[in-house]
Image (cartoon, rainbow, N blue to C red; front, side, top):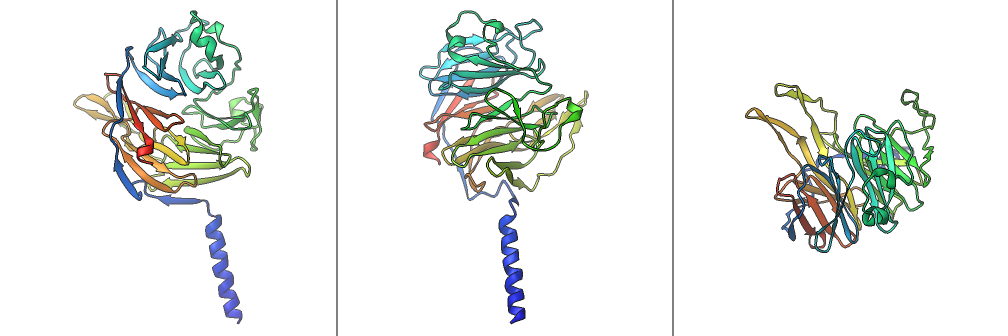
Length: 352
């Protein structure tokens, strides 16, 4: 009888321990389904993009960040017919100019857009209607509310309680919480004295892409340089994590004559639509040296998980993914690195 009780105790302990273990390893190539998706619509944008970097979509508008256009890095288009509505933002060293702009967050329902300047260490909260309808493009007209910090953030997730979760640019490795007034809130942990920050901040993630899950009140995070996706439960402050077999740190290899680093790239973005978590995945080195020149490669497949981080399907595309966004109706907008400024639009309802 004692042996039976002991066996039951060990078995129960093992089961409980397995249930409490939130992290598990997988192979991101082993998904239940693998589908190639066809193009729903291909749009040739009317204006010339020099070096597009990111895209955001809303119910009626399309936003593209063109980081090499020094005369106007932010392009705003109509989703209905894709005509150019507005060009905004000058890059330079003047008082009303950006040094290194990022399109951090857009919400047309709240009539707000956030632009961050990593090099200038500033975050700008801009009234979207004033931005679109005003003829003046100087920054001073739109710097309605901003604060300066020693570190800024390129990925935002707005939760239902009005707080902003944000990740830091590459090299800063921070994950913090801002309240609606942009005061840094305490997530626990010790103050980061080496960054001259008085506010206590918790360092959780490396540079990443964030999305907010309103169903479970959670933040999802996909790593740029690591094969990992995390789920941060806001209520319990617990982190759940799934990682691939190539999750360990990889040292950059020097290639070419000027010592360019051949960095490993895992995820290129992260979006949530209904109960689907969608992330473009490369899982390879992004930069190659070929024939005395450099070749940059971008993801061509989308990994789809459910909200418990269970793998669902891999969607394979016939083109590269530079940046992407999904609207509420399930239309997936993909910006490609080709020189023709093509915009690919897919209907996810056909595949998910």
